Image (cartoon, rainbow, N blue to C red):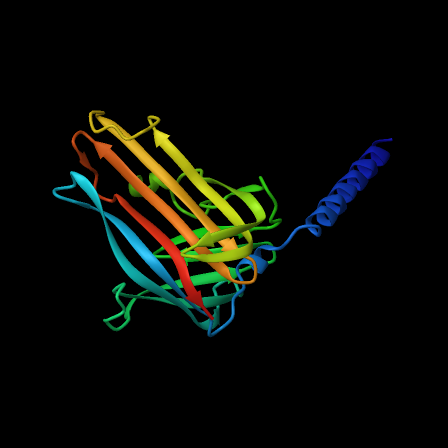
Length: 241
């Protein structure tokens, strides 16, 4: 009898696993929204938010950012990974590109891992369908005080297979990833409060292209100024090959 119960439970697990796999086949895969190939190039309008005036206010500085997929390598886990070099220049395009840093992207069977400036994110995850969610910051050590704001972000898909326009360019099939949208205590911003924190991050990926829009903002208002570490980045795709 006990043996039959164990066998029945095993069969249920197999059926559930097959059902889940068949359901996943109905939806696009993460790598369809982030295809990687050596030689691919993306140029973005980059608006960077930084504190100024003794951290009493935030200002925006604008650049152009270029990401180029330069080469591949095998990481420590034996997985194929891609080196992406980021360059910056002025928005008027009068200055030469300046190398900024290296990004590493690793596509796996069910997700896209992305390492930027010592942070490792799970940017996309199968299946790509509305309301599917995952902990995109699970690889980050959020017990460190300066990383605490990245703890327990619940990434989720929205507006899958809908069009999206940025900088006058319309992309027919996109997926929006809402990573966090939190005001603590709830906003709007009030400089009279002794403490307030804002964490907001969203990214939009176009099928067959990659990242077309990103909007990230993190700040902590303490007393009468922003704490060190406040910053924001907004990327809007201008062109790609």
